[in-house]
Image (tube, rainbow over all chains, first blue to last red; front, side, top):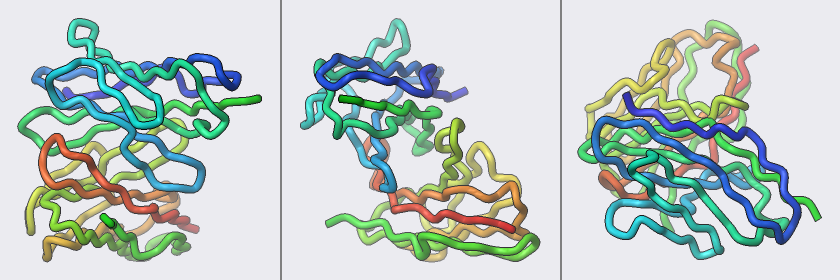
Length: 113
Length: 112
């Protein structure tokens, strides 16, 4: 069955510190993987995606994620966070050949000064 | 600019009422989705549609139905609203597999 697990419900971190938000997926077929971000009182927007090719994908605001097939993971990282990165982050998967998009439970990133 | 529009930001309905949540996209997308978002549970898929008049159940379809008579519009129907359906409802659309899904701003539904 298709599923996504985000083990950390909340990650507190100080400004300029590195952060990693964990995501593991389960699927019997090949998958596409996504990270979405939801800022307070806003809708979800795509942060980055893995479809094929290079296993390391990057966003325009300094986040990156690496697809690891052997560990079925797609962890999100940023070397130095800003206050403005405070948001909820959702990992999602879509099995290739299907349209069903499944989300994890989300991780709330709290960046403090 | 791409747009997914949900008809209401906030709704308050009474138990037992029939409730319609409307979603319109202007991107000619084939796929449309309805999710509910609850604290600690993330986004859970209720129904999705990959073409006009085509629909598939998601993970939590009980108590809901959907309608897609036109490509741009996807409606979520609560046949008889109950308090446990109080939630944030999110609509999304996408062009094809593997392409970004665009989300509406959400409808916060309260059933009293």
